Image 1 (cartoon, rainbow, N blue to C red):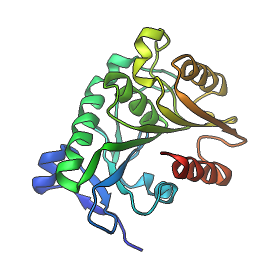
Image 2 (spheres, rainbow, N blue to C red):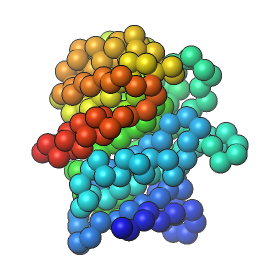
Image 3 (spheres, helix red, strand yellow):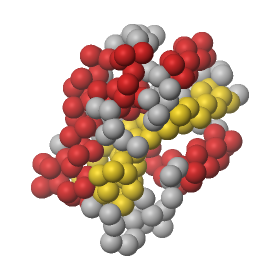
Length: 223
């Protein structure tokens, strides 16, 4: 099985703006592209357990977040435990992710109309923030044990989520994203008229085997 390649220097890093790992599919493209955003205190290595959720012929890329927390750990925003940053707090992360997405057609022959985000925990929040800030930039979002930025709820502010396919995985025993908050985020997605595929599981801050199967089924069903 091919393994992802680290890009931490050179012209591709300059073009994309973020250190990342990439797994290019067989064939000439253009490719559907899945950008996998890790959570708080993660890095570009941790999202590859989800590599098989999307079809093998998709381009898969995992960027490193922008806030260096030390010891090889990175975050998209600084987030003290139990706090939920508002949408403006994600501006720098959204800019970095947006520029990264827009570079993929140039550097990896991604289809600009077939860009997808999958975020874990804080990475899910960045995914939602990117869609809210730039409606239409992605075709769908998979949010894994994550949350919406704080303060989202005004219908006029949620236009970027309208009719957007969203897979949302929730851990009923999650100690980091409380179940009640996750339920509130799901309700906000429904109010935004997102095409929500909601799933909760008897697990903590992770995706269990059933969740992996459901996520793979969701990706396969995307048009």
